[in-house]
Image (spheres, helix red, strand yellow):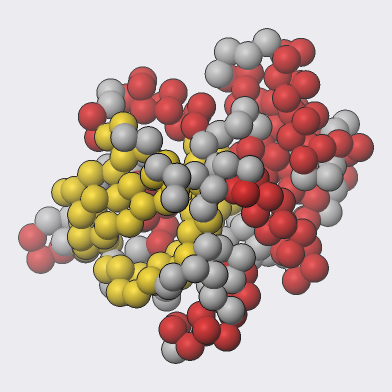
Length: 240
């Protein structure tokens, strides 16, 4: 297996203090290699969102360490951490988070322009990313001119542009119908197979079945993990 792109080493995250302390994650350890998609499942409040926030450097652990390609995120200052998030991490959210007054191409190009890439070069990269998700012909359209599935694919293109090493997807199919969800997962899976690493949070065993492995959280703890790809029926049995 390839070297780990993402690694959690005994990660715990607590909020509050004293009797009000909430333990969102407790001693979680796992890793995700290049070319690997890991699904995260668990009931509401199990720590899935906290795990994603820590993986992307949006939050810091109370104890333990998070590494991205052997760089400990907690050892970086704010500016270096912001650069790492911008250059290496792509985020896909359930609600798309597109800028409504920018076209599809402009939305996808935005993170590259923020990274200092020239406007023309950023647009070329954006068009290539849109082609990867099958929407190059929609480059000039605004979000309100697109279906929910098309908006989500644009959000994925934005997450993929610039050859980011880690893709974090938080319920990316939650607001989509089954057919559109499958199209979105095909795009995500293709980028992982091309060498990125991915973490997919989902409640749906049928979508977790697209992952190479699935880990299960309960009350902030990693309570189970599968081996190589499982069928939805096998995953459903583990969540019962």
